Structures are given as structure tokens and as C-alpha cells.
Amino acid sequence: MAVVPPRPRRRRPRRGSLERPVNGRLYRGTWLLVSLPLLLAAFTVARPVALPPPSLPPAFNGRAALELAQELSTDYPDRSPGTQGAAQAADWYKAQLSPYGLTTEVERFRATIPGVGTREFQNLITIVPGQSQEEIVVAAHRDNLGAGAGADDNASGTAALIELARSYAQAPLSSPSAPAPVRPAHTLVFLSTDGGAFGGIGADEFAAASPYRHGAFALLDLDSIAGRGPPRLQIAANTARSPAVSLVQTASARIAEQAGVPPVRPPAWQQLITLAFPYSLYEQGPVLARGIPAVTLTTAGDVPPATLGDTPHRLNGTRLTVIGRSTQQLLGSLDQGLDLAQGTTSYVYLGQRIVRGWAIELVLVAMLLPFLVATVDLFAHCRRRRIPLAPALRSLRSRIGFWLFVGAVFAFLVLVGAFPRGVSLPVALETSAARHWPILPLAVLGALAFVAWLVVRVRLAPRRRARPEEELAGHTAALLGLAVVALLAVATNPFTLIFLLPSLHAWLWIPQARSSRLAVRLCVLAIGLIGPALLLGWFGLHYGLGLDAPWYLTELLVVGFVSPATALVALGWLSAAWQLNALATGRYAPYPSASERPPRGPIRETIRRVVLSSRRRRGARLRVVAG
Image (tube, rainbow, N blue to C red; front, side, top):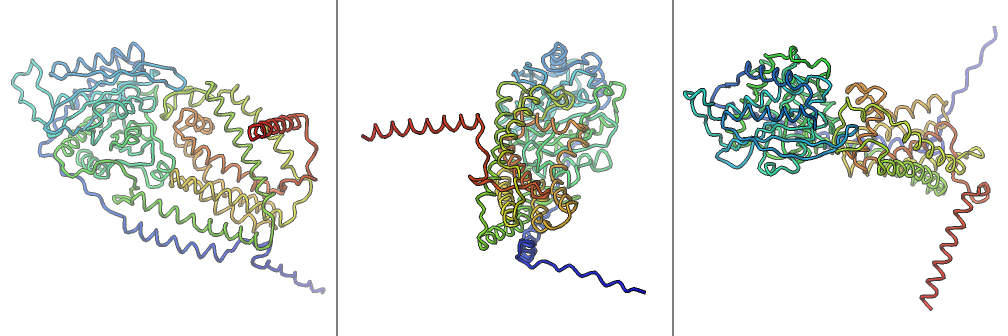
């Protein structure tokens, strides 16, 4: 019987060679530095304490609030901003408070809703003077989308707002024997906002321009409080901030006392996502972004109730009463409390404890260090071996130029009004601006991007197989570009590293997998896409956008909710990802030398002549002036 000789063992490439250029020991050793920020973060874990409950029991009339919610949603089902129903609902609101001696001020303003147009809005403000000029604001938006009755969203919150204001007012003329109300320690502001269903337009206007915003140290928002779900707290902001932790803890304690169970808060991973990409459909979002501590009490999830099913007969009176009484007790705690921390900060709840945001940021930055150290070492490795990096950097420059051109064309289309524009707030999910892709402007953008790609492809298309040294230079240039992108992300919002770290640490090893099979290289490339996939999946699944999630994120950029700095970081990441994709799939070529470049086409030759002619004329003028 023939003996099959053993297969020869494949010898592992030597460390520091072209096949193993990444210093794995240095990379792993740098991870030890992450233990220090983790230890520091562990010491910042704290259990916040709630303010004590007020001395008086709640007197919130849940039955009366339910009747008000049913009346408002039945008589004025269409309360979308600027309509006759909205004006009538505002008059109805004022009529409910006038018998109690409460005067309602009207703050009018105009704003543009993406996909809807410019409308006139009315914020209604009722003041109950207190012993102090510091203000506690209780808010609820009065409007709806106009496609349904808006009973839970948000006739329920408006009705509770009216009942809470009545409890601090003089009794109506029909009840002269009722006891006089107790004067609060702080001034109370009852705010009925307009445009809350469209990203919190009224709340943002109040926090930005109302004369009453200066004394406000807390805002309690009531939104969709008569649903069938459990009581919830919404604490996400439109920036990477969170409300004062004592406000959140006190709200949780008051709800637990009335409901028998603590309210539902977003889990820790969801809080991290909303810090990395700040976004909220509720009105505490823009208020927190303006620096006023705010929290929303609701029975809905992160998305308000469905429009068509939000009818008066589906209102849950028990939930309405529980949230109303909880808000009244919370208002009493804040009014009597002396140690409520003012301002906003950032943190993440882990059960009943919190981890400070700055400690999480420090851990994320520390997790960036192994990538940075390994990338710098790879750069030094190329320098020691005298591998030229200039062609690879020029290739990366061409890719960056392509994406900057696409970004400039997109900005021009936005400037000329090709895409729906409006206030810099979250776009309502039910509007046409959120789900309807504008085909013509996107086709123009795609066509111009294709032309730009044809121009760039002339320099980037491979004409020969790249040498190992050239591929290593291409990897190094792309990783250096990713390092710059990561540092820019740290400068804008360190929490965005949550989306970047998978690509940084996965793509660092693409040079090491250069000799592996194509499937292995593509797997490493796909691991780096986890961060962007997480963001798209979050909006597509959690907010029900599905395949419209990419356009919705684009529309947030159009209206200015996503900053241009974030867009530039994304374009830089795409440029580096493009080069690494070419390397992983074997389609990379260094920037060609003068002898390898094809002859210029008519367009490029014309541009070259115009530029050279302009330079000669400028030089001639300078010589004349010097002479």
C-alpha cells in the first residue's frame, strides 16, 4: 500500500515582511492602555437620588382630562399647522382656561416644514406667578399631522396640560366655595406648542426665541399619554446631551409611585446610539439641544402612535390619569426641591445607575489608540524600507476629490431648492420629504457623479499588476486617511466612534490578509461596514423606514439637522473605504507616473491650456508691477 507523503506545512511569513507588515505585538500591547479609562469609568458609576415627593397628594382629574381629549380630537380632528382647524383648536384651548382667570399669551412665528411648505404657528403660554422668577415649564403640542384625529398624539397631552394649569388657578365663577390655590415657589409656565408633530418646531422656537426661556430650569413634556403601552421616559436630545440626572430620576420615582412600576427607559445600547447620532421625534430633543433640561412622559415608543388608528374611542383613561398624576407630583417635587442640578450633560443609564458621558468618551478615544499606533508604525515601516508613498497618497487624493465633487454638486442642488428644505429639525416620518425619493435631482447627481468617476477612473484604473510594495503603500495611505477621519470625528462628537471603530480595527488587517483568498479579504472588508450598517438598520427597522432609510438620512442633511462637518467626515471615510476596497479585490493601482498616463482628452487639454494661460498673464502683470 502506497504511503501518501505528508503535505508540507506552509511557513508563516516573517514578522515585518511585506506579507506581515502590521506589528501585531504593538497593536495588542496598546490595548492595555484601554484598561485605565475603563477603570476610571467604573469609578464614575453612580446611583442618582430622586427629589422627595411633595407634601400634598395629587388632585389630577383624569375623567375631566379624558373628556377634554375626546372633545378636542372629535371637534378638531385636523389641527395641522396653518389650517383653520389649528386656529380653532387654539381658540378652544384658551376658552378652557379663561373661566379660571388664566390669561393665555400668543407667540406667533413662521417656519417651513420639509415637504409641506411655510406655515404660521401659534405657541400658547399661560403663566402662574410664583415666589421665584425661576420657571418650570410644562409643555404639550396641540397640533397633529392632519391625517387622523390625533386623539392620543396629542389631544391627550393637551388635555392633561389644561387640567394641570387649572389646578394652580382660581376656581371658576360657578364654584365660589372651592379653596384658593397655593402659590407655587417657582413661576410655572404652561406651554401649548404648535408644530410638535413635525419635529418639535414649537418647542424649538420657545427654547430659542421666547422671552420666557431665560428663567426656565426644567421642562416637562406630555406627549401621547393615553395609549395602551406602559409609561415611558424619553431623554434623547438633538445633540449629544442628556437632561439633568436628578430630573430623570425624580420623574422615574413619581411615575413608579403612581403606576406601581418604574417607567421604561431606553436600554444602554440605544442611549449610546442616540448619543452617537443625536435624534428624537419628541419635543424634549430640541429643548435639550438649547441647554434646558427636559424630559418627555409618554406611553408610546420612540415613534408616535399610528395616524389612522389614533381615534378618540381608543384613549386609555387609566394611563392618562396615571401620567397626569405623576406629572403633577413631579411638578410639586421640582417646585419644592432645592438641589436640582441645572443644565445638561451626557451619561448612560445602566439599570438604576449611570456612567458619565465623559468617561465613555475617554474609553472610546482610548480604543482608537491601538489603531493609531499600528498605523503610525506601518507608516514608519514603509519609510524604513524606502517604499514611496506619494503615488498611493495621490490615489487617495483623487478619491477624496471625487467625493468632494459629489458633495459640492449635492450642496448646489440643495442651494437651488432641488430637495425639500425646512427647519433644522427631525423630519416627520409620515411626510413626503421623509419617504419620497426626488428622482430628477438624484438622477442629475448620479449622472454628474458618473461623469466624475469616468474622469477619475483614467488615473485609478489598473494598467498592470501592482507590486507588493505598491499595495502596502496603498494600504498605508488609506489607513492614514482613516486616522485623520477618526480624529475629525473625535473633534466633532467622540460618540460617533461607535460607528467608526469597527472599520478602523478590521481594515487595519487587510494588508495582513493580502495573500489570503478573496473570500477572506471580502469578509474582513465586510466587518468594517458594521458601523454604517448599524446606523442604516437602526433607522430602517426601529423607525419603520425600511429601504427609505438612506434617503431619510440624506434629507436630514438637506435640512441641516446633520451638520456639514459630519458630512465631511463621512466623505473622508468613503474615500478611504474605496481605496481599501480596490486593494481587497485586487483592483488597486498606484497613481500613474507621467510616462504611464494616457494622453489628455480634449476637455482636460482645454482646461490645462486655460490654467496655464491664466498663470502666464498673472506672471506678466506681476513683472510689470515689479518693474
